[in-house]
Length: 448
Image (tube, rainbow, N blue to C red; front, side, top):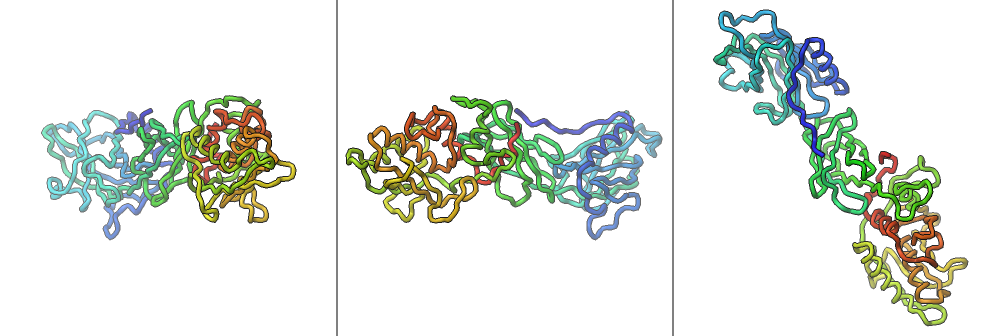
């Protein structure tokens, strides 16, 4: 997927030209004063309205319209004049010229004036677009512009007037696009959402992107355009100086063990308590600040003394780290620094349980940020296999998986601590996702 290129355009009739200019001006804020600060505007220039200024030059009225999204980008438009003071030499083109030191004149023509291009004559109306890559265009600079008729040898006619405007300044947004499995996503286009425009960037193989310069003074929301394999995401407006965004796209692949009426996005939202009962009542995504989680494991056995629960806990941590393909848990000897504390004692009604922030009165999964968790396995477990299943299931909860699956093929089934007790591909996708999706991500900004 490649960004579309936005180069100079040419209009036909004057009516179509004016319609085009009206579209370009739409949605843009008011432009800076026509004359740069401290400089009197040429009397032919009019005030800027919605990024558009106009003034009389040698070819008549010229209109300059600043692009509402792209910085240092503007369109110069004029109509074919009825007559020109260049006779007897024929007019072969029009020089679009700018100067950042003062009005364009015969005295500045070969000193400080930049000719952006010479447009061949012969049309009825003209519209030419210039951007930050055009030599002579300086972002944020006060600028005077004139359209001057030229003869075949390039000599200008009489330079009779120029209009003043300010080239818009810009900023760029740089960030990354990744999958919910933590992989960089290359070839993803990013569009500006408001006003609708795009693309302004495409991610590289490492998932990184850097937009073209965007008009300063406006925060811009970006929307990914990734194709059919992902749920695309639209960011909140991002302004100059804001943190670099990390945009995480959700995988559209179906679940290994489907649930009726539930796709992969809905499954993720439910089991993480991203929303609770009502998909319209979502919360910002809550997760641990960083991984791996520090785990303290207290000594303990089952009631019969036949199963070393502490040893099983260590083995299942190693097993799940390998299955997920990244280190999500690591043991620590300091219980005061542990984010997960593994204990064994009797839990009425349960064989295993994970408690969120046990020292708080009423923590709520999906809303309360995690500080520490207590993972408890009841000594009533009878076999080593049962203990392994329980630890697998409860360790899943410690990743901040606050709810259960209703599919008995999933480790995170509400009875998954008993059978089957091994992570399915769906469980492993879930574990990677909760360790990857940035905190604060808005579920409703994913597009179906």
